[in-house]
Image (tube, rainbow, N blue to C red; front, side):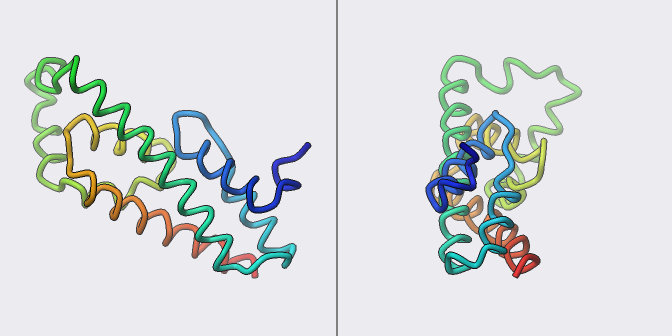
Length: 141
């Protein structure tokens, strides 16, 4: 059974999985459902955004869990500590880019690992992902 046949639930599942370490194609599912015109575009964008945000928060929590056992400074050689300082400098703002392929999962993991504020992380992740899904949805209306 194709995930698109599950409708909104399928979109949620696809968006959640796409935002964890596992690869997924939530944009394709969203595009298919938008072009089918069976659901309100706003509903689809919200469901995809919430699912993708919850998946990203799963990765964020994994980073937080890893930080308890492996502090960031203990794992990085001196030459890479500057990168860590850069991420610390931008803080949760960096999570606006959590929607980026390949990089986004790492940003969410790093956000948890660096113990960024959960509230500001959720807000940044949600808005970054919402903007991406809005662009995808309106491209297929």
